[in-house]
Length: 171
Picture (tube, rainbow, N blue to C red):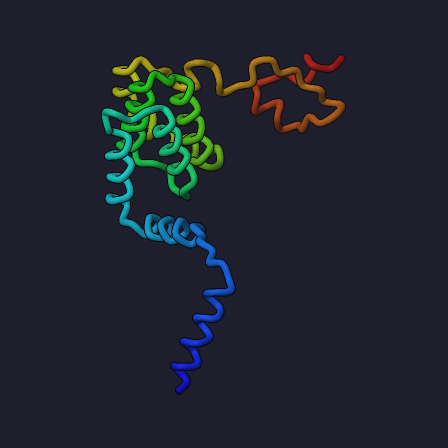
């Protein structure tokens, strides 16, 4: 008897209301699954995706954005695949931005020196093979046209960080 009432109520509701389709739950469920993957499977997914010969620039950017969204520092093998994909689509600026993003994801200065240094050391043969310079080799790790204004916002510790003499910039 109760099931008959439920069926009748469903038919009334389904005729009177428009059904909505949402994809947010599907995307969220996919991300949850990917985050629970083993590291080897996670790395293999990105390496396989980025190693496709028919990949285009949009797909490379999509993959690197997706990789950056996860709370991981990519394995050097994934970095190599990403650099090769960027070079395949002839997007040199994306290689530099990708290396900068990896450096930022490594955390504070102490971790950055160790982890980022390790990644660059591991991918250096690929960088040389593809003719890609690191941001440090291009001088992009320091500000180019930077004029400090200590009377407004300059902190004392920044003088040492940027190897600047405090007395030089007093006007």
